[in-house]
Image (cartoon, rainbow, N blue to C red; front, side):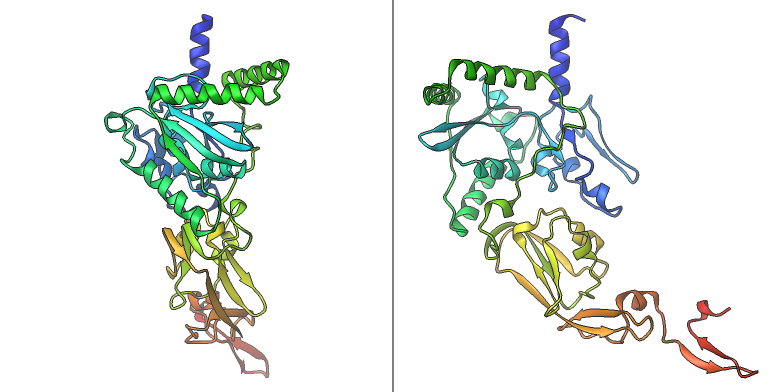
Length: 367
């Protein structure tokens, strides 16, 4: 195989999205209904059925539109914006490959830049993002028209609602963008980067570009979540995902608390109550999928005041296990959720012939 053909093959394989199975909701619960990656792919490269989730590598062109769609950040791509330090402020540049520019910061599609990547940049001090792109209206990748602009506007409102410094985003024509990127590169070199250090950095970037990380290396980087950026304890303001519990339906079984991967729904003991933290919610939908009474809902990009569901405590008359229930929905019987679902009845002590005693329970429990 010639060197050019080998490099093309390596670059093609490296452009494919990398899946971190341990983060995917389908690895966490069997009844997960998430189809985010499948629905986002313009080439139907993601395959999902009752048995497995897979990627058709021949159909995939590495556009990366599935990356921001995944609520669990279970899909990663190699391409990312390039960040520079300029006058004590982080400035990032990103370009669509269809814009006809080359070099650092070029991605297959700017629409693959989602909220998770914006949060990563923001946590690193980036306050300006300069981008350019091709003609989205004639792109066969068929990103949703206006989705990138809407994400930018949502991000502005989110930061403003929580009193955080804004991130400035500005679009340039490809030639203007390339001029500004080259200026930032020269400025960063002039701020004390030695020639030897600069060459080492270029070599490291070239090596990373040509190598596809193996499974042991992928997913080592900690995902930056919204809670890492917002002030501690932020409960009021605009959030991308807002979980809500309907106290009239909730049976306080605790399944949502036990299965939420980010602690967005928590149980407090004294006084007993559920608290819902939209700042920790990824929008994975696990809580909705496992809630039998359909008491949980998820709202996207809406304001939240923070929800608290007050609970009362009782003891199950069948199994003797303590249980809780919302104050707005007193139980119709003194059974815990498990016994109520199973239709169990209270066992009654009775006397049989011969002076022996026994228990009378549900028909299935009798010999």
